[in-house]
Image 1 (tube, rainbow, N blue to C red):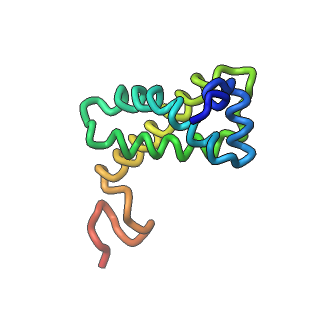
Image 2 (cartoon, rainbow, N blue to C red; image 1 turned 90 degrees about the vertical axis):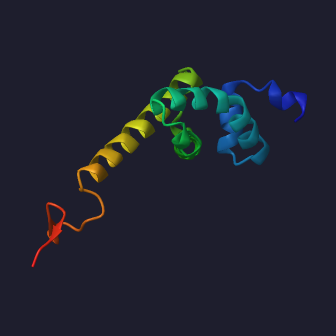
Length: 116
């Protein structure tokens, strides 16, 4: 990676990412992977087998949301908020699955048992 890329401000890096520059995406990922990974591990609460998948999921959400980034706010705050929201969403999804709410069509099952 060349030195000019490593010296990019967060705002410039986001702008380059939003312009579709692959090198900028690579730099963004490398620069913020540690921060996102630490946040995900903190939320994982001992389930470290999930952390790699969750880090990837967070970055997918980040890359989709980067156009809405407000450069007057610290980028780290923005990234951590996205990580928190992804974790909450996944927690809710897992909770619903444990209750038997996921994977069933509305009206076709009652309390996890087929009607009929």
